[in-house]
Length: 91
Image (tube, rainbow, N blue to C red; front, top):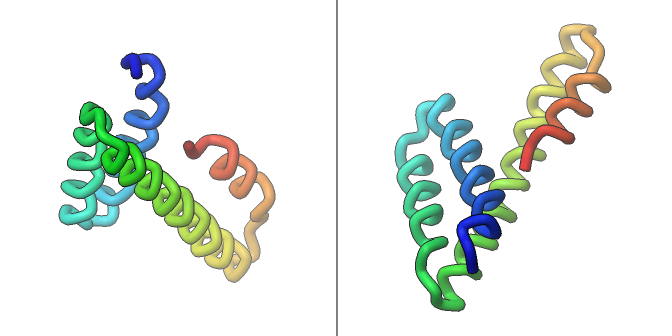
């Protein structure tokens, strides 16, 4: 697999790592960076691990979106625009 094919997955993992770094979760940052390094391993288990991590990362984005939307709803602020921006921008 070429670097061009792996680039979207690497970028998604780096953004996910930045998300965890912003929340102060250094253990998850290390895990995400390790999984990004696994993309260079040409074994089936490595690609399955990366796929599972990306799926869990997508679930983390959904959880974060729900948390932010609930906070904006309680504050009486609009939620639709924020949801569209977060939903379309994330990997």
